[in-house]
Image (tube, rainbow, N blue to C red; front, side, top):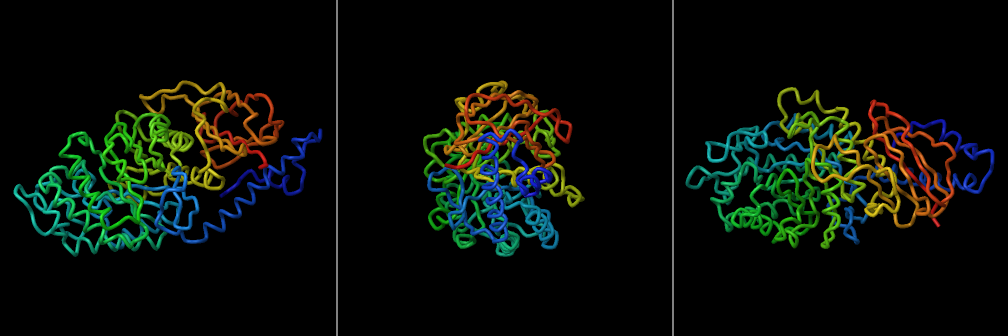
Length: 485
């Protein structure tokens, strides 16, 4: 993690951070900071080691861990149409870029027609063919819909290449087997038996590929219709009959949903996927509070450089979505999207290293360098007691002024994200000891010291945001840390 508050770190190194009045909390300030620095060293060493895929749910069901039970924060891009639009050379370039820039997951449509940036509409000739002109299946049913039991080997060899190249770059493929936005009639014409066989084909082909996550559905607007749900359940059942190695989730309907809205999926998934174009804290909390506890993964929200429902995916909107969701319980991670990296049109290469992507990596580094996986949302405002704004369940992301907060049960860490200027009242009695407080600028990856920090863990203290951040916006992160007992 880049820490640009160099002067403060220099003072830590020399012991000069202690204030002149030499109170108990001043002497303990190093105790709060040194463990964080040690943890940063640990994370840096861990980052040098290839991740041990596949992922699974943690023992408490709240976050994802790798195959060595190390907590893992999923950070993904969404190249939905990669099979349709990128040849092997371009795909390798894209995958290398994403891996080297800190992504660890990619949402890919295994069957991609015009709905997700590919070719044709279902039922038309050669719909869903890949960039090499290969159809995914060799036979069709009445009406021109593919027979899902007739996979075309060259097409699936292309998929294999993506899986293998992604793996060499530390990337997981978050595969949607059959997109319900564009392939609904194909699934219905095939029925449950053929869909089950298609699922078995996928499960058998990729059960031993460690870098896979299954994400069914996608814009599954008609999941409440029994026959529509049944065919996708059949695909999931087919996969699960031969592959129990991988995390599985489902994206249901826009504009807002979480996987457990459909109770038929609860026994079939191992992660709860959230989808919303509204302020993300609400649906993340809905998913987090479900009695069937499983890691909450934020699947889809406003994409960068794209307008949905009259709201444009600006860096400010993206930051709100990211920090709100994690501090509201989406501890498994966050899937990002970018208009140019999901449609992959001509010139996509010039839209890779965007402001939104860079700030997403600040987000990833901020949380992965501390114990994000132990954070518990402050739903009853016992930590952030006042100054948090108004909680809304609908409306534009950019119109919400609500500040979210989360803390660890041991009292050593709390994170508060405010999207606008606020004076935040914090109950310091939540902490295990004297509290070191800093402002974090999510647009610049820098920290700002707070006067009189560290504070005794007594009473309530008001923290006022320090004006605009480096991008000229009002959002900030308040980081509060205390030594362990």
